[in-house]
Image 1 (cartoon, rainbow, N blue to C red):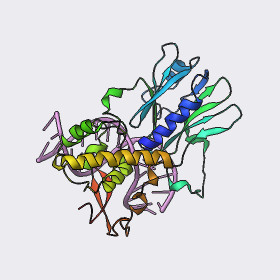
Image 2 (tube, rainbow, N blue to C red):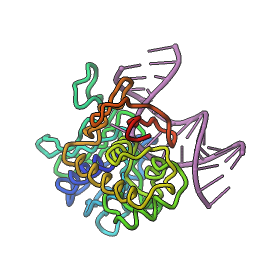
Image 3 (cartoon, helix red, strand yellow):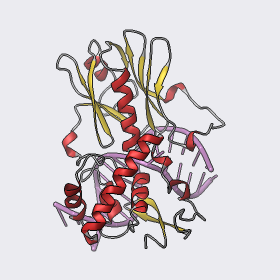
Image 4 (tube, rainbow, N blue to C red):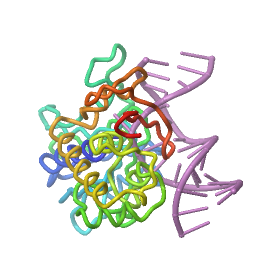
Length: 270
DNA sequence: AACAATGTTCAGTC
DNA sequence: GGACTGAACATTGT
């Protein structure tokens, strides 16, 4: 997915363009994307209302709805994008999380990749466009199951939360119950920026290292939001066999940490 | 054709 | 209860 920065971009598009428009119709027929709801349930819950506010915590975003309606949760999964269009057909949002925006040779946009659509009375639409189909739209999310947002957590809380666990530090910062919003690429980027071995037990880190990791993470999140996504991180292009650390030139090494492919600089990160 | 992929979740095990 | 592994989920791209 889209990680925290991509979700924040999607949230801001909704905030700017999708609020206060009357919902005329909803296509919720994709029963996997709309799990656990049956087809028609989301439609019934939403038609006639408006989205009044949009919020985000980590990678989860949700909208408040008018007339005391339910909260509409949207999770982008591995490849989801939110697109909001105007009555004119002009479209906003998106972002291609694969291929650095390069054009792919085949099928840039199949209609069936629109997994969920809200049709506004003015003719515009809000669509969840999701090639991988691991995104999700559902009602009344359990927001409190998530830890504090990784972009907003204060350094003291961050040190407490991360330093408390004996899990590898990368697994710990990616645990959405502990800290919300950090995905695989953001974790590799922040750990590389902070020069910390992702395999080290989080509880072995010094207070200074935790402070440095907190700073690196916030900086990586801000940079990614500014530049259009986590794939713009400085280390991301070097996460490949034969890759070298752009800071010291040492080889990058691949491992599995917390069940995810992990790349680190062999000199600066162990 | 096999494998990896920026996501979550759940079962089994130590 | 924690933490790890592996699988599953659905699909695309290499």
